[in-house]
Image (tube, rainbow, N blue to C red):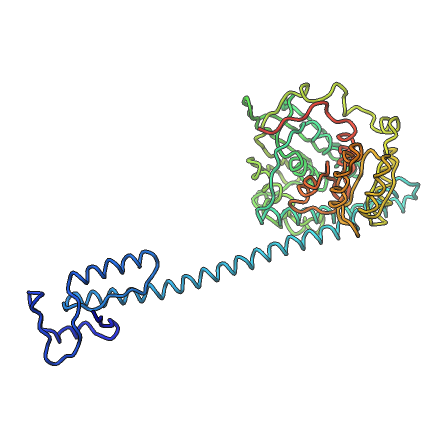
Length: 498
């Protein structure tokens, strides 16, 4: 049967046909030469076929005109709708293709941004590590009062720059949704002790007394992200030191708000007698780049990122944060966190009190020998000086190939491995060492010592076979904690988080 193109025949042209009630007795009008058109049964069959194609996304099966004027008007409208759907479908496909291209472009830009931040982090942190290290070495040497003041300024500036880089990287990771909260076993008392050690230098320089009170009654291990908890506490206490006048007092109080069989809600409260914050400014200080007012920024410095990051970290861990303050009297910052309770301490720790152990005496007794793989000459000097403070014997190599050759002597107890080195990086060198046929060599503890600080860097170090991770600039407390962990491991494996 020859069909009439619906785009060439207007529904009104159906009047060319003499329409009768009996479908079998249709006469063709004498003034038309149009071919015979399908009857109602055929139209219904074609319509069902067109609908089947339409449901599968095909819009090219159109209806021919029938013998009935009224039906032809519907057919013409249906074909017109098909044209519209077909055009919209083409636009949708084009739009989806554009979206896919835009997504690929955005993903590539995100990867490039992450790579850029990682590279910039490494390139900036490496010289900062050297500056801070040399400044610390100068502090320990005989200096005139003027020289001590100059070194103090150098130290303050370097630490501020380091914290600024950390804040920018953290904010970038949080906004990209790439900051993950860990769930590992830790002791609350150890976290508090590390925090006190970290801020003690700044507090002593302003003759500020730090009081800590732990009434949480938590005598078990905990499961959570102790590094982020420590970061929040250091930020809050650092702000308290910044805004408290010389000779002032600051307190850290830890208490249990609520406790069940498996979870404790622990509250941390930092109180100072500093300049205080007005009611209006309290409402905005947790927003990014916000501080109390412009005069605060001019007088005390800072970017306004710290409290914003604290808020985001607390919320990521399922907690809440707040502040109460009176201008001229001081401030009280607090945050609450739900933390999973772990096993009792006596079931995990060895009988030796590790916190009381004389680490240096232990190192001297065992004659602990370190292999340092580091290509930067300044960092070599700084890290060697730090290690010699702990009476560690240190040999230095400049790349992964030299590290593999040196470790073959079998004389080293720990390897501190920089990740980015010429000729062979730390990751590849670690894999070679782990595949060494001598078990005593393949199992040597390897600690990543690197300026990389982006998401996945720590995981990449562990995946390559390393046992730990110490970032640059080196935090003395973190370095010492790693030494204690490696040299005095627990006699039984730590349990997994529930």
